[in-house]
Length: 103
Image 1 (cartoon, one colour):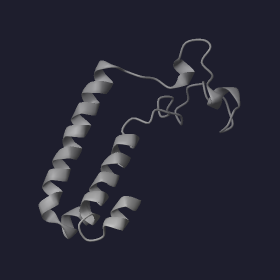
Image 2 (image 1 turned 180 degrees about the vertical axis):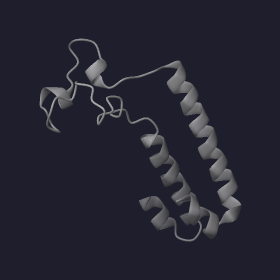
Image 3 (image 1 turned 90 degrees about the vertical axis):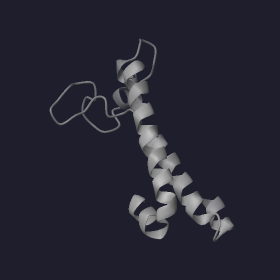
Protein backbone atom coordinates (compact mmCIF):
# COMPACT_ATOMS: atom_id res chain seq x y z
CA UNK A 1 0.00 0.00 0.00
CA UNK A 2 2.68 2.61 0.87
CA UNK A 3 4.52 1.91 -2.39
CA UNK A 4 1.32 2.41 -4.38
CA UNK A 5 0.70 5.68 -2.53
CA UNK A 6 4.21 6.90 -3.18
CA UNK A 7 4.17 6.02 -6.87
CA UNK A 8 0.62 7.15 -7.61
CA UNK A 9 0.39 10.34 -5.57
CA UNK A 10 3.53 11.38 -3.79
CA UNK A 11 1.91 14.62 -2.59
CA UNK A 12 -0.57 12.64 -0.45
CA UNK A 13 2.04 10.12 0.63
CA UNK A 14 3.81 12.40 3.11
CA UNK A 15 0.63 13.28 4.99
CA UNK A 16 -0.60 9.68 5.08
CA UNK A 17 2.81 8.43 6.19
CA UNK A 18 2.79 10.95 9.04
CA UNK A 19 -0.68 9.77 10.09
CA UNK A 20 0.60 6.18 10.14
CA UNK A 21 3.68 7.02 12.21
CA UNK A 22 1.69 9.09 14.72
CA UNK A 23 -0.87 6.29 14.99
CA UNK A 24 1.86 3.72 15.68
CA UNK A 25 3.49 5.92 18.34
CA UNK A 26 0.15 6.52 20.05
CA UNK A 27 -0.53 2.80 20.01
CA UNK A 28 2.85 2.10 21.56
CA UNK A 29 2.05 4.51 24.39
CA UNK A 30 -1.40 2.96 24.89
CA UNK A 31 -0.03 -0.59 24.97
CA UNK A 32 2.62 0.46 27.45
CA UNK A 33 0.13 2.34 29.66
CA UNK A 34 -2.70 -0.23 29.46
CA UNK A 35 -1.23 -3.68 28.82
CA UNK A 36 -3.70 -6.27 27.63
CA UNK A 37 -3.62 -10.02 27.37
CA UNK A 38 -5.59 -12.66 25.51
CA UNK A 39 -8.64 -14.16 27.26
CA UNK A 40 -6.60 -17.20 28.35
CA UNK A 41 -4.91 -14.92 30.90
CA UNK A 42 -8.15 -13.26 32.01
CA UNK A 43 -10.04 -13.63 35.25
CA UNK A 44 -12.05 -16.78 35.97
CA UNK A 45 -15.41 -16.81 34.20
CA UNK A 46 -14.14 -15.44 30.89
CA UNK A 47 -14.44 -18.09 28.18
CA UNK A 48 -11.30 -18.70 26.14
CA UNK A 49 -12.60 -20.45 23.04
CA UNK A 50 -9.10 -21.41 21.90
CA UNK A 51 -8.49 -23.36 25.10
CA UNK A 52 -12.04 -24.56 25.75
CA UNK A 53 -12.80 -25.99 22.32
CA UNK A 54 -9.23 -26.79 21.27
CA UNK A 55 -9.70 -25.03 17.91
CA UNK A 56 -6.12 -25.35 16.69
CA UNK A 57 -5.34 -28.68 18.29
CA UNK A 58 -3.11 -29.18 21.27
CA UNK A 59 -3.18 -27.36 24.55
CA UNK A 60 -3.25 -23.65 23.77
CA UNK A 61 -2.54 -22.61 27.38
CA UNK A 62 0.73 -24.49 27.58
CA UNK A 63 3.81 -22.37 26.78
CA UNK A 64 6.06 -23.81 24.11
CA UNK A 65 8.83 -22.36 21.95
CA UNK A 66 6.59 -22.64 18.87
CA UNK A 67 3.69 -20.74 20.48
CA UNK A 68 3.27 -17.09 21.25
CA UNK A 69 0.58 -16.92 23.92
CA UNK A 70 0.19 -13.17 23.43
CA UNK A 71 -0.32 -13.42 19.66
CA UNK A 72 -4.10 -13.51 20.02
CA UNK A 73 -4.25 -9.76 20.56
CA UNK A 74 -5.31 -7.70 17.53
CA UNK A 75 -2.77 -4.99 18.46
CA UNK A 76 -2.34 -2.76 15.43
CA UNK A 77 -4.24 -4.93 12.96
CA UNK A 78 -7.42 -2.88 13.25
CA UNK A 79 -5.52 0.40 13.03
CA UNK A 80 -3.50 -0.77 9.99
CA UNK A 81 -6.72 -1.83 8.26
CA UNK A 82 -8.38 1.49 9.04
CA UNK A 83 -5.31 3.38 7.79
CA UNK A 84 -5.19 1.33 4.59
CA UNK A 85 -8.88 1.98 3.93
CA UNK A 86 -8.42 5.69 4.60
CA UNK A 87 -5.37 5.84 2.34
CA UNK A 88 -7.16 4.02 -0.50
CA UNK A 89 -10.23 6.23 -0.04
CA UNK A 90 -8.03 9.35 -0.16
CA UNK A 91 -6.40 8.16 -3.37
CA UNK A 92 -9.63 7.17 -5.13
CA UNK A 93 -12.15 9.79 -3.99
CA UNK A 94 -11.28 12.40 -6.64
CA UNK A 95 -10.93 10.12 -9.67
CA UNK A 96 -13.67 7.60 -8.94
CA UNK A 97 -15.87 8.44 -5.96
CA UNK A 98 -17.91 5.24 -6.26
CA UNK A 99 -14.81 3.07 -5.99
CA UNK A 100 -13.71 5.15 -3.01
CA UNK A 101 -16.92 4.36 -1.16
CA UNK A 102 -16.41 0.65 -1.80
CA UNK A 103 -13.18 0.87 0.17
